[in-house]
Length: 242
Image (cartoon, rainbow, N blue to C red; front, side):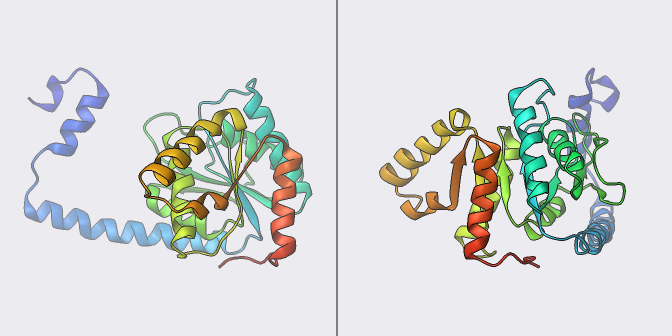
């Protein structure tokens, strides 16, 4: 079928991705992509390297302002800012917007690492003007999150949130990066996942070590989030991990 024969955008995107390309087209596209990727890394490093210690807040882009988790994320970011940490989010709506809003209201650093997507994502108005970075590549953006964060606060979310959570746990578990706090917010949301990891991955299949669950803390309030961060960095001196 031709591209114009498809009646919805998703099918058109799939067809466009799958259409045959010549070897020269593939080689040329890949070569130029290298320079685009390098440019995103350089821009990210130069901008993020000027910012002090920050905590990343992750969560769903679909969470509405009236949702309890939106309000909780805003309150968490506010208290994190008052405790002296900057806040990094994915720069979009939902929980990300709540995180930037709380940091903004708290007078703290508010960073947005925005990703260009065909739906859902648009940057929110609470990001500091000089700290709104845009990315085309998810993997470059993920490097910025991990490299320049002193902790992860993970609110309820979908696949992207899970991706960031397990990326951080894997890198810490394999000692590719230094350990930092990973805080899951919302016992009712996260308890099922944690129980599955414990009963299936650890006890039944033995694909995960028992100590790996010690990498995370589950809390329900903004004060608990700040306590976990402060207690961790009383034991381990807070300093940029880059």
